[in-house]
Image 1 (tube, rainbow, N blue to C red):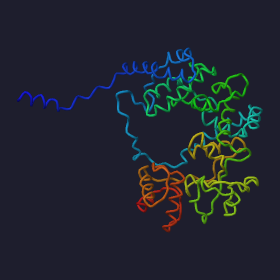
Image 2: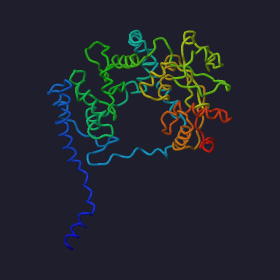
Image 3: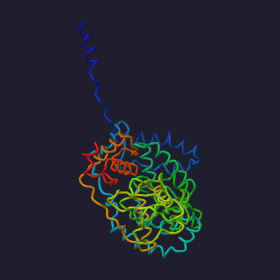
Image 4: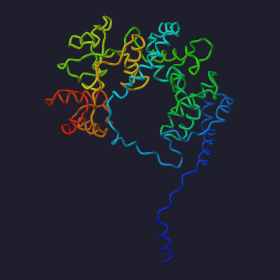
Length: 411
């Protein structure tokens, strides 16, 4: 009986944790996965056996990429942003960098003038906008692309936190190679798997890359015409409105609430002008623009530059879903096209705040029935205008932006 009890007691002891596979074991699993899963999937997608074999034969794991979850390990918990600093949007706009990109952009505008004219005629996107995207994404093609794209995509498809997405991108990359646009050894990209000078993911390459120089290949690695036209084609298919600007820096009177921003609160630009909103340049809004809709944008609330933007601003956000990115592109394009300078409005300081402070405000506003968008500690337009609405209803001057003074008031 005692022996039986002892055996039972031993059986109830926790089992020792299994050791995670060694790198060599994971490498073996990776080769098996390429052969048993990726090869048949690529073949089903129309990639020849020869292309698959040649492309995948030398593919290797990149262990130093971010967001990897090797087999046998636990996925990391969602990153704790509570201690991350909530910084001023102005940090995004390095004047030294913008001046350098603008000077190079103006020079390249002259060098590629004929190509840019043809691109604008074809796609309706101004050359300065195309150049600005090119400059922001890859320094006009001068930035190094240090990673073999197949290695990055295969690594992330095998053991990243977004395996399904990267698996699709890996198959699309193999289809690009099958099409003959580039060989596997020449397909270079970023640590995130973005390809060439426009920094297209393979799925975007498949939809938007074009052969504009007529050599039979859409070469976004080496061909300037193909690179520029591919960027324009992307923006055109995302809805760029031919003949319209991206937006205008403005001055919004204090008696006009800043809680009116967002693409869902569009008004004819003439209506905004009738409310007393003026361009900072002293010029009037172009006559053609006054007849169509524009949207208020206050990325730092009353603590920074203010804008009336057009739908083209939101097309720029399709390239990178960030208000600041789209403003960077718009400002850089204006510098290239017109010799414009920095925004006239100054970016005010935020003060000592953490993202957890902003998140707390967002949750409080949600509890009061406000739509803040994603409660993530970042102040998107829905958070900004909800703050402005709350401030106005509580007898405060609307600033439409989180600041230290609101931490105690909004609980």
